[in-house]
Length: 460
Image 1 (cartoon, one colour):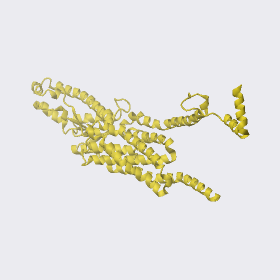
Image 2 (image 1 turned 135 degrees about the vertical axis):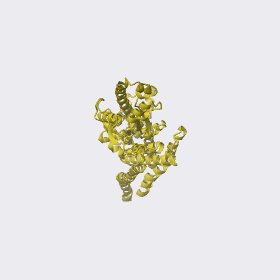
Image 3 (image 1 turned 180 degrees about the horizontal axis):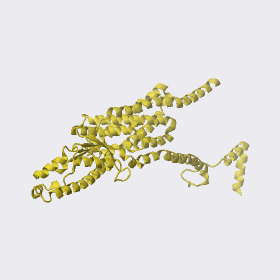
Image 4 (image 1 turned 90 degrees about the vertical axis):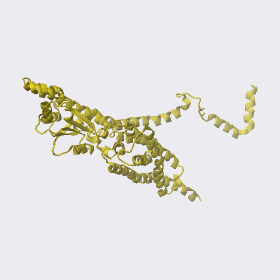
């Protein structure tokens, strides 16, 4: 009872104004205490609603973007087997009308037509007159990427065997009858999965059948010829396996660690470019309100180009402890590789710099997904093994960086000029879009600032 009386007296003694202030404070909503509530606590219902309003639309947007972009990567592998006939090879017949040369022509033409194999499980073979190309020219055709592979029937292969049988030549080498040339480093995935196994299976199947028939005919005719039987006993290989082939890998893919540089490494370049762009976006917000438009554009373009120099150089150096060599055909190959990494980082980073202007850092990761997926979709398999849609890859930075890297490390056919031109074109395009997007977003900020500046002037 005394406590109630004391409270009443305190209210009376403080006067009517203080009573109203006390009543107002009592009616104020209580703020939730920090670090003291469960997720479903009623006192944080407002905050829970704000959380849902942020995450649910983003969830829906991510799902939409996922369905719009990720199928592109799946599709880049999904129909590869249907396009295997796009891989072309030469059959160079130097045996003329000899039995081996004619058999090889018939077998490879049947293979091109898809006879005796699963649908699309064959290359397309082009018959070339042996008198039109020397061995060096055939090799150059493979290295210059005119064809993916070449099978050459050696000069007079059939007659060479006949002569070896007639004289009992024990030094006869059946593997010299046919040579199979290919370029593994052009694309090791294609060489290992299609070029080598398909060609080897075709040659072995053809030669096994032909050897049995050709040897059977000879033994039948020589059955009553004691001299012939005595002669071939000195060269049994001429009847046991009269014809075989030799494989020659013109550009071996020997540096397997370079696989990291050709696929995941390129993804890392994109991610590093994105991280630097986001960091730069946060840093320049401190200073950009005080810069003129031209100075601000210079900051957005020149500063990243300077930042990419040490990052790209250190990225290139990571390969050195793993004994990746860059001197296959170019003096200073490492520095050429570094230059391409730098140009690619500039192309990717500046494109993100442009898009973050309109997407804001909140939605910029969605553009990163697009950039990664559309770049790597055409970097693993050759574009000719993909639907026509994927020809866009010829104009994307990572495809051209991958092609240039193969040239620098393995001395494959050089497209370095074209590769550099396409990558630099991306960077140049971003140097146009960055000012345009910046002007479009900055004018609203400048307008708001000018309106705020007018208010004190009018009041004065």
